[in-house]
Image (cartoon, rainbow, N blue to C red; front, side, top):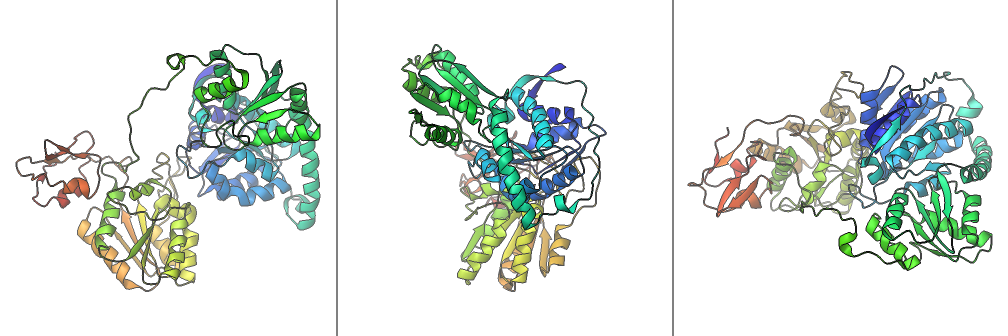
Length: 599
């Protein structure tokens, strides 16, 4: 064993490698992305790693690897679990052969997500065991145990790290000798691998029996612990366990009985009964859903225990957002009466400058949105957006995202609006990675149903928002292999989109003309592909500057596009050279040609 300073996501990847993982798949999404990226960096000859086209494809491929006896891991964020839910729910009934871990990283806050959904609740719904780590070190330890349990009970196992575990760093004891897992290979058995109603019925009974057994197993698990004494109790799960220990130290370690839960489902009922016995009140510390609180309330009812359970349902803790050491201090203080130290003695995060989300300086999406906005001036139009960097097109002064639901919904939402408002020009904005992940189905639907919409594909040659991961249109796989680029325009043409134009968003006149042609055609689905690389992928070299003597201080360059590199200084436009990429968008707006001089 050796110590490595690792991010939580890196610890999970190292643990998978050291457990003999054979197949790793996933779809990028903060806070989970670094798990698969680390697997690709540290892979050995026994590991295959891929960014799949979406979470559903990733999970199904991982299931196939597991059917063949391989150990597999599939990674995603919590909203990605929705995409993967179709195969996951059935896989819970079919089961696996090689150990399989589904990593679904939750995002309390949310810091970078559409929802605050709780994977623990999903695990209970799917009837699958779930591990809920409190730290990077524990996440590492849980991976090996999850593989062991997965193979012993022939079930997928969910690992639910949250953002602070995923992105927190710690010194982790890592094995220097990875386990070598040799898959048996696929053994034909239609009674096991082909899901029929009768098989589902029989397997459902087995699942319920297994989960009852696992509740007993988890009552003795090293990831669940019972300590302390007294008439007051605290039950904590996930990263809230770490906050609890810090808060108790700050409060002078008041006398409490503590139940720490690292495996929230199946709930360790016997251990919980032992914890609750003799208590008057219990404070439950967890993030997002009241999973532990409901489980403890159930145990109290089942065993007729007169214990007051305090948490989200009772209004004693916040029912949304993250916990912190400070908030947990307040909760425990109310339970125990321990005095909270003066504010200056509490751990405080440094005050960070306010930085609203904004498209990067030189981002091609800004030019794309601006071209459409200018082309549609004075016309009734709705702009349906999607998940990605281009969601930021909703901010002033662009104000070009009217709807945003989930990945791929821009294309289908636009179809629904068009059917209700036939006179409105309906646009859908979608990125290249999202197009492959979940947009193609919507295009097929629009072509099949002959819906009059305009699709704007923002092709910046990467999966930008989650960290520049490759996708089917980039021509490179996560294994480092060069593959045939899948053409967006040929895909659209094959589906039946008759009008497909491609242009650079920075060629403003041609871009506006292409949008106008598409908007005025009114004959089914039309598409315009704005193609220009993300500035993180292709670094520009030029910069622009303002000729102060020519500048009239009108501010049009700021009001129109909102580029973070452009500001007013001494009543004149000013371009910050450390931010400017020389894209030229602001120069084309200046009414007196005061911007130029690229160096």
